Structures are given as C-alpha cells and as structure tokens.
Image (cartoon, rainbow, N blue to C red):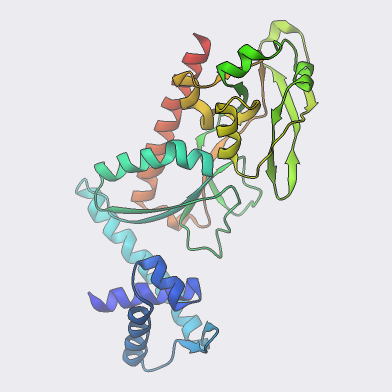
Length: 312
C-alpha cells in the first residue's frame, strides 16, 4: 500500500517540518522521504511543500490537504483498530511522552509487557520532565503528574490517589539524627528538584494520622545538590546523599526492595495524581484505551505493594 504509506509520510513530514527529522522519526533516509513527497505531488498534480536549503513549509494546497489527510488517516486507523479489537487483536502506532523517573523505572517495563501481549502495536516513548506541547509535537498521549492546566486537554486518571513521600536510604537514616517532626528536616540535607529554573523547596506536609492533632506544615528545604531531572534526585537519595520528597509511584519499587525507607511516615507530601492526557478525544482509539486500562491497573498494583511494604 505505497499510496497509503506516502500519505503517512506526508503527514509526519508536515508535523516535523523537515525531511531529515521525518526520516529520523520514521527510521527512513531523507532521500526516501523526499522521493515519497515528490511521488505524492506528481499523483495529486499540485505542490505540497515549498522547499529551500534551510526550510520546508506547506503550500496553501498542502495545508488544506494536510487537514483532510490527517482526518482520513485517523478514521482509517480507527476502523482498523475496531476490526482488530473485534478479533481480540490490537494494532497501530502509539507515540507517548512521560516523566523521566516514572518512565525509566516503571513504565518502560510495563510497555515491554504490553508489547509482548500485543505484538502488532508499535510504541514510541519520549521521556522528559518538561511538559510536552500536545499540539505541536507528534505525540498521541502524555503521562503527567498533576491535573492538566490546559482545560481543553482530555485527562484520564491513572493513579488519582498518588502522593509525595519523604524517603532516604537506610544508610542515611542510620547515620543522621532521627526525624521526629517536620522542622527536623532543617538539620538534614534535602534533595530538591528544579523546574523551569525554579527550585521546588517549599515542602508542604500534611498529617496522615488524625490523632496527632496537627495541621499541615510547610518546610523551606535546603540541600546540595539539586537537579532538574527527577531521576537524579532519586539516585542521589539511593546513594545516601539526603532526603527526597518524591512521588510514591516514582520510588515505589525502591521502597518495596528496601533500597529506600520512608521518613516522617506520619506526614504525607502534596498530592501527585497521575494522568494520561491527549489533545482530542478522537485520538482515544481502542488500542490507546486498552493501553490506558493496562497502565492504570499496573499503577494500582504497584501503589498497593508499596503501601503494604511501608505498613509492614
């Protein structure tokens, strides 16, 4: 189905704005991408791109054709997904973005399991602690912590009851003064996360046991080093460098394995609900819905295991 493949290449090239970037995304050569575009233009009888040595942009005809082609390909994929689903099969391409820590330590293994169960599904994963622009990037879905600020995004909960926890390595706990109340954190090395050049060091703590009769507290955490990569903070904590204020989901396996232990267990950090978001409900194909259900179940199982380990 060369004609259909050419349409897919056209849409990806328009999204990327470059033959070379499209080639990298689709695991092809720039020459093959260029040849596909030229072949499609010859079949249509009008130019799709304006080319120069430094840029590539759509013609007015190309912009119209892109809009209709994207809709047609999406409808076609929905049909194929429905047929596959009715046969008990899933197929299609899934391009997703996820936080670095969650992605490296849990998600990638769950994706591997999902692919084993559904070998006709192709998955691309982008890991970053920066928020992916769902409108300009060729990403189908994104996994994010916290409720989306963009009200026009479709958000589906993966782990709505997730919260931050204070944790450190057993060696750090054994070799440093005991923590009894939140203010004791001021005498400890607190490993802080940076976002958009701002340091997240106002640690809001909420009592999780009613009988302690206390109200929430906010601690101005201080420590060295800090990082804009959440997985770096986790690794520093594992290495005994200090106390981290991490999403329970991110450190769940470390708590289960005993590599990290919870400190100030009577206090929870802020809520950190985990969501799957997309820009348009029409993107939610049977394959994506099945993937969402699979990841949601995995999150619930992982959280339950971690909480059980903490309670014990």
